[in-house]
Length: 344
Image (cartoon, rainbow, N blue to C red):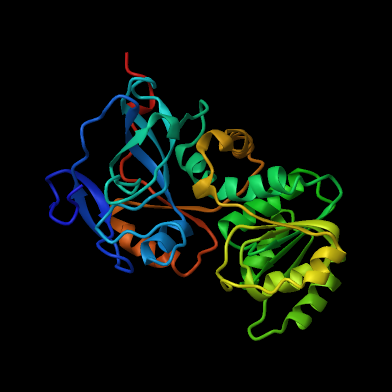
């Protein structure tokens, strides 16, 4: 794509990152002709994920883009042209944004057929999109990786963000005996109780591992499953309150890129530590999780605050996302009208 040289009006509207660390700008891109095995989608709802900001910063461990590109890792939209999907049908799409492959923060996106799933009838596109990346990042580590069992105690580190809020609800829905949310924002922590948290623990600046571990133990007792979205000192403290044979799954590291794991603790309690990265998980492996999430959100069994922005408001949404909002931001480039129904 020639994002840097393009001007509004010469192609489709899109948000563009010119270089690692640059602020996004609104421009346009020209998509290549659709080839067999790909589908052209009119974007209806594209969630803004922390992953998008980390990749754009140039600091992500698995991707760095030096040339201009259109960011965006997922969306829901209406099929415009495809060999596999009916025109006008709604689909969920995973996008692998790069300078050669524009992502989902655009009016249209071209996606490989294997990176698409049909959306269930009657599901709100914005809600379906909002629980995509965030929902699978909570569901798959808890249910498929840690294999949460009814009655177990679950500790969610980083519980006030979109992933953490969904994790609290998923653990509660799957019969966890106790669910404890950990985070920094006190107001957001208070709201977790409405979502199913049995207790909350606020992180404090400058607190030692020993101090945090003592407060966690008082609130949780021995923990069977830890969903760790922060790493660093909070994870080190959480390991100390793990029950024998506890399962710990890491999904992020905003609190630090390293953590000390005492060998005696790891072996003595026979802990299982693993990591989950949705970016490296094929969409076909997420289908069961997405089906559960979409069914739950359609029935009102999952709650998530969704804030919608137009593509013109994208730079402001990007800046707000960098401040770690306790809501899900969704970009809606176009209103879905007749495209939501298959063409006659």
